[in-house]
Length: 266
Length: 156
Image 1 (cartoon, each protein chain N blue to C red):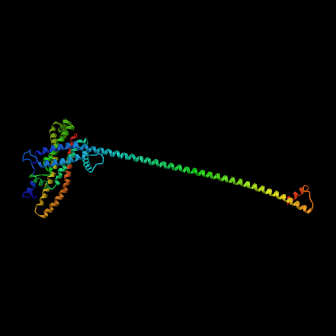
Image 2: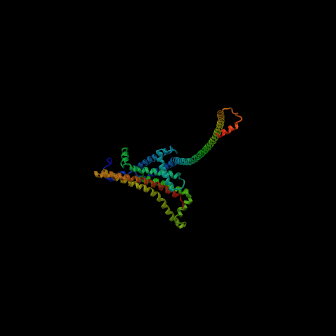
Image 3: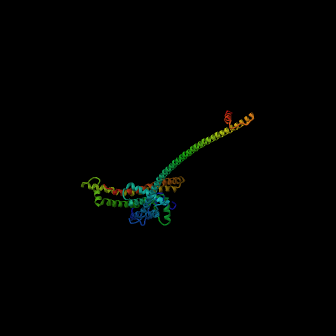
């Protein structure tokens, strides 16, 4: 907070809610912070699992391998409950989603000023540490899932089957009902990625905002408020461990549910 | 608005991460897990089999012990019978020997008594003859008076 411009809590929060952009304004600019953090975490998670899987032994597993296997078995169990088919793609997809979203969410548990403080020394004026509190990030994932849903709808039902389903379910085959059927199916289809992306974004954004509000207490100028800040930050941090895990879990399960629904015939 | 080209970049990253996990992480780990599951199942089966075999062996051992015990008791019985037989025979032999010895001794005694009696009788006869000759003071013809003297001896 000491490094912040003097301007009160509002300016502090606004400062923290601004992305580090490659260039301002246009669609073709990038959020360097989101991309950097998500890439580092993605490579970290995948690299770690890759190392463990490369040295995976069918004999007595080491502690690292055991942990990796526990995570994999947990994810695989969730997928198995929802999807009854070949899990060679859906399993690793769910694992990637769970690990990546969990780690990106977990960036929320770092002190809100830590990464911005470091990057400011390195020359970045703004830095947001939680990629999942970035709509671009969450929608990137939910849209990828959406693409997969469309792909598997075509693959499982064929072009004709999928079209037939779009126009005749749920009301019936009558030509007059084609338009309402299609409209309803479009709403259903589009609501999936929107809700998926918005849910994760909303939870993480709100969590981040609460952390910032509590952090504002530290510079409020009173020892009482400082103490309340410490208590509040601790309590909210502990509670947030639950939220980041649950949100990662929900995102994973819904991804699996949506894709397995794409396999179902109506 | 927060949505910009980050979206496209992250979609690409996401796709790459998924592909990487599908190709390099998941198969190795699931293979290791499935192999271990097989190994554990084999181990459990082997343990189950070994336990059954052990049970069989135990039963066999118990059977053998029972048989051995039975055999031993049979042998002991036979030995006892034999001992009894030997004892009985020895007893019978001893009794026979005793009766034989007793009979022989009785025979001896009887014959010795007979002989003693004969001797005594002869002696008494001679004494009687001596006495009589002394009384009569003359030689008596022993042959002529033998019958008389014998009669005398038996009366003594």
